[in-house]
Amino acid sequence: MGTVTPIDWYDLPRLYDIVFDVGTAQEADFLEAAAARYGRAGGKRALEPACGSGRLVTELARRGWNVRGFDRNEHMLAYAEERLTRESLGATLARGDMARFEVPRPVDLAHCLVSTFKYLLDEDSARSHLACVAEALAPGGIYVLGLHLTTYGRLLDERERWVETRGGVTVTSDMRVGRPNRVTRLEHVRTRLTEVDGRVKHEYESTWDFRTYGPAQMQSLVKSVPALEIAALHDFDYDLEKRSTWSDGRLDKVLILRRR
Ligand SMILES: C[S@@+](CC[C@H](N)C(=O)[O-])C[C@H]1O[C@@H](n2cnc3c(N)ncnc32)[C@H](O)[C@@H]1O
Image (cartoon, rainbow, N blue to C red; front, side, top):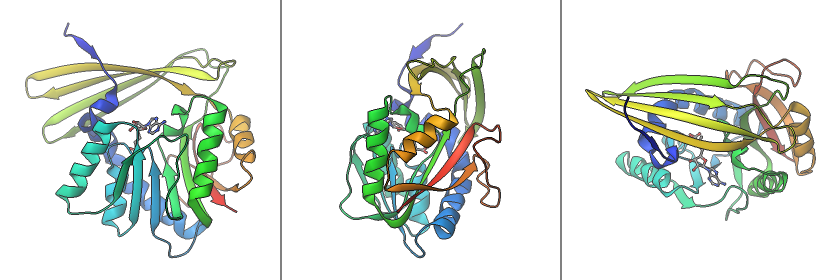
């Protein structure tokens, strides 16, 4: 058996990007369509808190958006900068914390997908984040927030596995989410990344906690930030013609929050 290296997987942006970039075009289509339907007509200023490898920053910049993104991980930011430079695209990137931030000019669209919001581990940080987003949005602007909700009664770990190949490198991401703790509102996540490049194989393991949200907890959090209203609910199918509801049994939700 080979060695498994413990690592923060965001220190390996290339591997993260190989796994997640496959969904980028569809997500960007959805963001643009959601902004047109629920948001401010014609506005093209976007903000991505925790922008990671810059896959969506780059895609929106390519589509003519004026994009601002920030992240706390310098490896992710360097990867995003390099990618923008390679494509001769412009966007403003910076180091920053999702829990507390401000922008110099209001934006029309903000977004935070793939459960990134759950890295805010307590209610104060989550509320502060939403208040900062509200402050950053122009009136009528929208925040597209995608996350997996939690079923507190579940008895088993949840598992998700992705396998993607790019440039001859195959990356397998095997994610295991432990049983949620109803009291602490935390669930423990372990991701095993396997990189295979020709005959060379590396294995990495990353662990962290996510904050958990049941449907009522999410709605109550949003309600606590009066500057935002829930304009619509969708899911990770990213189909604007298909609305979701809080009680449809699906845990993957995409909230469209609008600045009043
Ligand atoms: C799942 S990735 C999402 C990246 C990007 N938004 C995307 O859709 O591909 C999560 C990102 O959140 C960042 N992150 C986690 N907590 C953060 C915080 N408190 N402030 C800023 N960035 C944070 C990590 O460094 C990582 O780049």
